[in-house]
Image 1 (cartoon, rainbow, N blue to C red):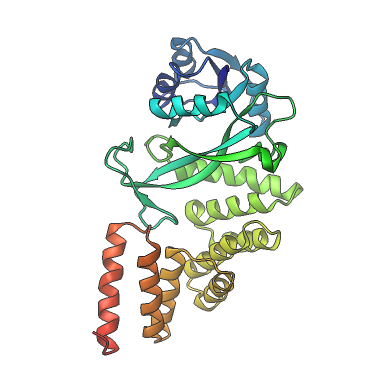
Image 2: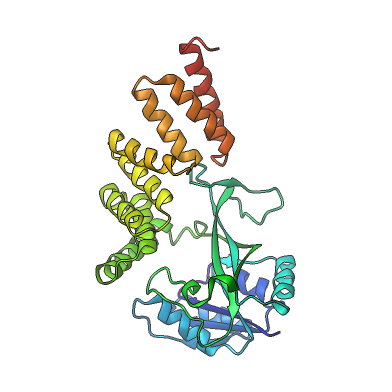
Length: 334
């Protein structure tokens, strides 16, 4: 089994050496497609004897990815970004799994390292994790390992995916992590990049509505651009189009909450809650709204659910416990 690593890069000298050094002993081919670097990225690729190609960028990530796939010669493709890496043990597991399988594509566990403990789904980093100083991460399953075939290719000009070209019963989730250091480069803050992505997503959505893309654009609008009105509308549109409706409703609630429109926020949260959806961050915001309404016992129950769900980080957890104690005293329950 021959494995090709395919990458598209631009001005990635800050990370690229680490990514390629981790990959080179375990892949059979390094395919690096450069879209206009000026910082030594190409020299780093040459240091690892990568097959280096230049590609004229035209605001279409899927087209660039597919160009990289077309240069590969392996039986399997692994796709990474320059600020990602896989550990040696996991490379070995990955090769063993792909060597004898009926599946055509595998989702890996992208761990997005961040210090934001209130990020939805945040988990503390284990002591032995290659966390680069970040206290924890969020998880995003992402299809990055697949057979090299003409009928498997990337779709969508922004936040591109191959999922739609691989049959559902031919995809499998693996617990192999991709370590993603999205916030580590001080010269390329995530907010700056997200605003550029949001511009491209707005353009794509104007011509082709897509629930997944509405959800991603809504997140960028809320967390990076601070445009809560746009985020609210985009999350609602994602829910309407059927993309992860409960989580999209939670996003619409969060956007309304940040605008201090607490009634609308609670409406969205309750719709998600009625679907059986739970998240610690949603329950925390619902509890805060209940406190504003003087409904302390309901707030206590929601805060206790936050603790049961976990994932908000130790600092936030300590605040929640103190708030529960305070509310219990006010209700005569302590």
